[in-house]
Image 1 (cartoon, rainbow, N blue to C red):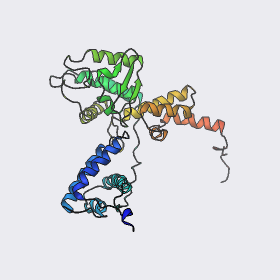
Image 2: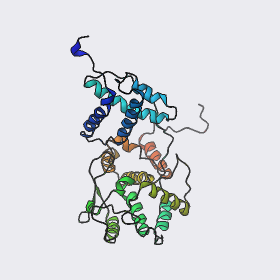
Image 3: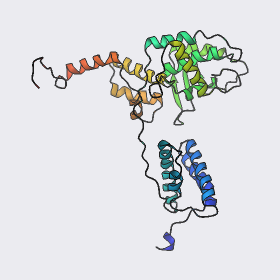
Image 4: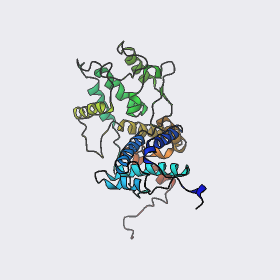
Length: 330
C-alpha cells in the first residue's frame, strides 16, 4: 500500500478529543447526542485502562462491548449502533477501520397502549380536582389537574409539558410554543378555548417568585418537577381512581394520555368523514414525529370502533368478507 493511502492509527491519548470532535459534528446537524456522549465516556475510560499510552487496536470496540456480561442485549445493541457511526466517521477521516460486534436487538412488540375510556378519565378528573392543599407541596393541588388535562388535550410528552414556561404561551392566539422537544424542533401547539381558560387561570395564579422563564409546573416554587415525581403521583391516582395497573407492558402509563389523544383525534376525524390518509401526516406533525411511520404506532382502534370499520369494509368490499351459508362445506 502506498504511504499516502496508509490508514492512521488512533492514539488512546487523543481518543477524548476525537470523540468530542465527533459530538460537535453530530450536534451541528441538530442532534442531541446526550446518551451517546455517555457511551463515549465509558468507552474512553475502558480504553485508558486497557490500552494506556498505546494506539487503539482494531478490535477495541468489539472487546469493550462483549467483555461485560452485566449489560443487557439492548444496551449492547445501543452501544454497537453508536460506535458503528463513530467508526465510520473516523474511517472517513483516514483512520483505521474498527471491528464491530454484530448485535441485533429486536424491539419488544408485546406492549399494547392503554387507551383511557371516558369513565376512566372522569374518575381521574374526580380524584385530581379534589386534592387538598399540602404544606409540603403548596402547588401540587393546582399543578396536577392542569398538567394532566394538558397531556390529554394536546397529546404532549411529559418532558415537553414540564419544560413549558409562561413566556411559551400566547393567550391571544391560544398557542403554546414547545422549544424543548424530543427532536429539538420547535413546535406550535394550539389549545382549545376551554383548556386555554384553565391554563390562563393557572398561570395567573402561580407564585410571584416564579419568573416568566421558569417552568409553570411545580409542586413547590424553586423546586424542579421531575418525570419520576409525576409518575409516582400518577400511580397513586390510578389506585384511587379504581384503575388497575396491569404491569410493565400493559400500563397504564403517563404516556397513555398521548395515545388516548391520538386515538380520540383519529376517531373524531373518521366520524367527520375526513380522509385519514390526509389527516395522518398532519397528526404526525402535531405530535412532533419525524414521519407518519412513528405516528402509526399510536393509532389503536377501540372495541366499539371495530364493528363500524368491519361493516364499512363489508359494504364496500364484499369479496374480502364473503357470506358463508350455515350448511356450506369448506
